[in-house]
Length: 443
Image (cartoon, rainbow, N blue to C red; front, top):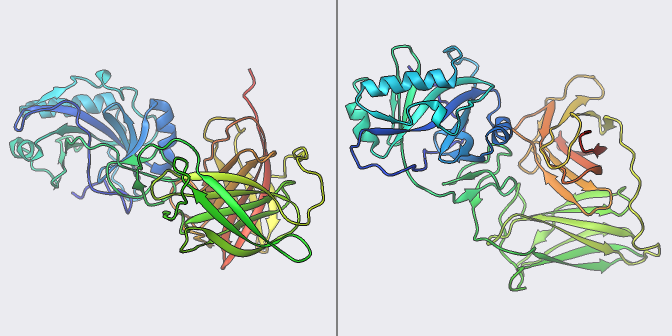
């Protein structure tokens, strides 16, 4: 029997946290996790984190999921050819597993699922198995009369007479040391890939206080405006120039140039020079703009830093009121595509699912030939109407070629927001603007 725990490509070696110390050879096993099969493990993380008030995490080799105290709810993708074991309640599965392990001479802690942090279970998906932890996996495997159908140095999987599965994992105490730069709440004791946006995890840096400083120098252009720009980034503590950066979606710095009236949008990537600055030749007309720089210093946390500029030759008023934006149609047509936005009512301070459906304008058929753009299926920039808030997001779940691409941004406050979604198709980067309203729920 092959292991039904086919973790999606790229999930890592097993690492688990200790809950209480046991001596090598002890007969006590503690509950470790519930393991579910779901259609989209990445998408399940947010709902599970809300339901259990836990921390999204990656257990290398075991799966992605949520940590509640020192217990877990983990998810794996439901394979198309997965064997159906029948739906079981977590409480029944726990009781069956505990009875079987007790018959093998082990003491189970706690005695029932009701005494765990995950007693509510998970409402969606099929429960694949229950796992218990030990500090001496080899000794436990040797004492169990049933031979495991899969065994490694970090876990063993056993089939019960009922054909259900129980897992025993090696218990280790390793702190989170890696995180996703785009989703810092996705953490892991080791390196790996973010299940939400597919970015490589990076080491968690020491805590830092303060925002990195962004200095901008413009190259004046004859007749007004700028023909180029240079950016220098300074450490918030020492004020010294930062010269080492980590790639975020294939670039060390993503720069967005947005006009104050929100009509101009550009996503560009200045070149990182030997002196630590970023520079490029780029034409910017006379006017007021907000520069939004997204970068990850090698010794710091992921940054989205804004800087207002006025280019040479601009003679209009400064500090004008924010433009009045009207909510846009739910479908935009551009560059041979019809892009439709689908979403439930948008609420502040919680994850909002934005689903963009891409249709070929000529044929009317779903577009399934989207190409990776800077390491992602798409990019999304969201700004408030006064440009005081900016969110740079990437798609949720596994990478897709279309026609539907889903983002899960968090709008910080009620208000009207403009956003630009970008896809690449047939070598062309396609940008579509949308305006949405975020409202508090009615009493």
